[in-house]
Image (cartoon, rainbow over all chains, first blue to last red; front, side, top):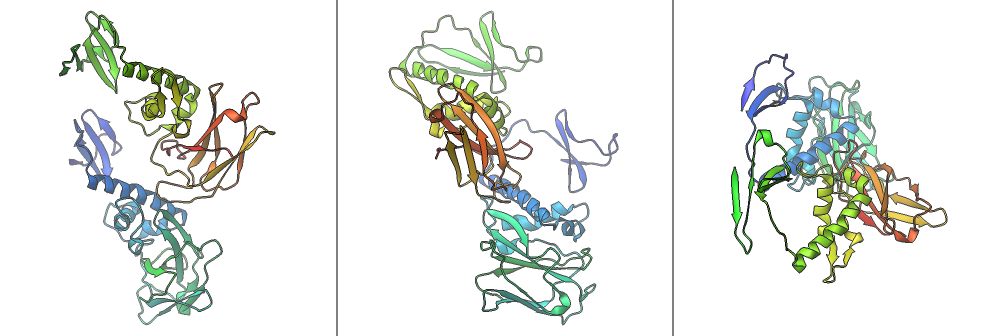
Length: 219
Length: 223
């Protein structure tokens, strides 16, 4: 495989050309020779293909939840798109069968200028609801008391859809706590993820998996 | 040219060839017969006589005589239901290949189709776990209902559910577009008046929004 710097058509050449194929990968134009024959796919290749298929659908679910913009703005290597960064971050969360089995490894939002607050923890309120509490001891750069805590829920397994408890967040950073209950019909959505986003939505923290809403955990 | 020869009671040879000026050559010429199979040009020695009539050969021909009319009857859904097939295969090739095992032929060469296991679509999308079809003989209609699904393994909320209704006696079919995977509202379709509601076989399958992926079809029993 070789890299191509520019082409006669101003960088727009793509596809098959004789015995060669031109394609773009991670922001670079590549050219390689078409294979004459194919070796049957190995087990590892088949599993990776299943993971990629599922990650593609997972990205669509995350985009439908309104989180794709964070991936576009988040920290990533030069030439990478938000989708590239999403795939790299979330591929390990999928099994060789294409199921979301590593729910604790799923990343819903990358770091994009903010940090989560200190000592973010989850506990039950004893009445069927849940409480998130945290401290604001460390003054992270760029943070503001008006930053919003966003809580997202997933089922995991064969289900990739993401539900936000509130698109604009459930509490402000300065409040130090947030209370919530699972809405009706969300009983299967037990895996909780949280991240902070600025009031204008331009900056966000990396998401963190806080556990399953059967028992509380502290992080 | 690659050669492959097999010597049995009647010896024969065939070869795969690539010749630019004979691209897609078919029929017979001199002592050779040319045909295309799975996207390749094949040449073999012309056969002067063909007295192949073993029971197995006759049963296989009976299967094909049964499947080809089914292909005609299910032409529209077959062309929609196999978008992920090999490029060497036509839609009919895909249907016959999948379903030749679902036609049984007795020693008297009577063929029976296993309609419950017939596949009118195949692909990588996930099929629904539960879907029900209720027949209304008075209104001559069918009511389809299923639970809503969202993004998941092999599924997107924009996948479109299709129903194929086959009237076995008339050997006619209709394909209906129902609703998307994320919609749970029941959908009713009208069956042509001349069709016998007792003689229907119903299949459902998903197509992706762009029609480039399909699920395996599923036979649904009328309630």
